Image (cartoon, rainbow, N blue to C red):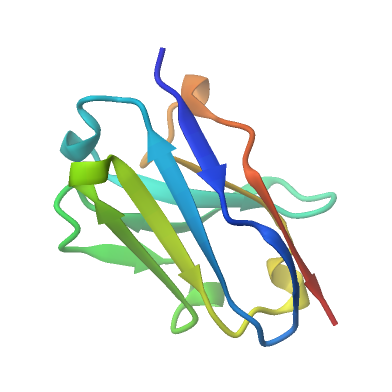
Length: 116
């Protein structure tokens, strides 16, 4: 059973920063592209960012380009999301998963709340 455990969320003011982490139990972690996804209040879960298996390529949803940076450390089976210049609309539960996501891999997520 693969486990993905997200951490690093919290309450931050508009313009602040947070760094999210995702720890994967999967021993084949380094073989797959990984992504971050989020679900805002009353919204569907949406794609935020993804990174390829080697870390050499990344892409982002338009609303976070220039503010968020995804990275990974395959030696640690970890993926990260550095979030800067946070906005209230970034509020939500953030999840990591493979990209494209596997339905059976969703974890608990980590809550990010951006106050105005």
